[in-house]
Image (cartoon, rainbow, N blue to C red):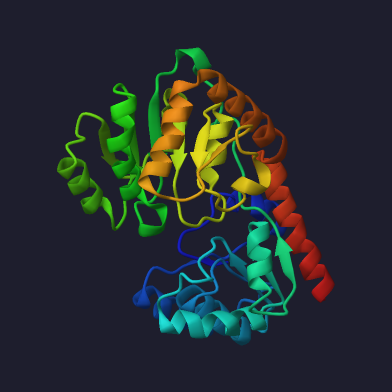
Length: 329
């Protein structure tokens, strides 16, 4: 399995698959170091899984599958392949890796159709959302929560944390006691911090720079009255489902599997476009209507518990790949 970081489901997958070698690639140095190691190794593999079909991970996985005479499976976890690839080498490598794969995993239905524009390879729909309900669960009664807004995730351009900060300028005019807490880090950390100061929002927006434990994140969801996802594209996003498992309602752009699983005004508040005014309108509507927040929270909780419990989702994933390897023998 080739990825940027090892999957949190690795222990459960090894119970189903046996030993999994994970190659973590974070730059040219790790690419060549691991490529040499793979070439010299005498290990045989039933499958090479690329968790991204772009130049670094996809390129390495393709070479490894050729060297080891092992089938290649590519996974696409975000809608970045249509209009979001800026690197020429990524645009060149992507179709090669997809066409050399025996199967391509798509984590939402929109991606299934997009991938078919690039390859005739079999596309498998498998969501990547799996929630540990022992960690992510309601701990605070709904009526005891405030009207705080939570954002948790990487501070990268496609997550639009800057637009959320700009939206707060509008929100606090309508809801003076509203507060936004941003948890995460990334290339936009400095810009977000500067924007908070520039817009004079220090009283209303707090930035907690860095990663926190799953238990601490669950506590943050429970303390929030509302979770905000304002991304331009996503695979899941898992955070919306983690929030739902904690009985925290979300406002979200129609990204990933959110519009496939949840319904607007029933289990989520869909923001049509990631623009500050649209984001602000959604947040204000939710904060001022506790009945709407409760309905969305309860429905999203039920869906998440029924469909995205950790062991159930991981088992679906593991069994799909076992069936694939059996079919290739």
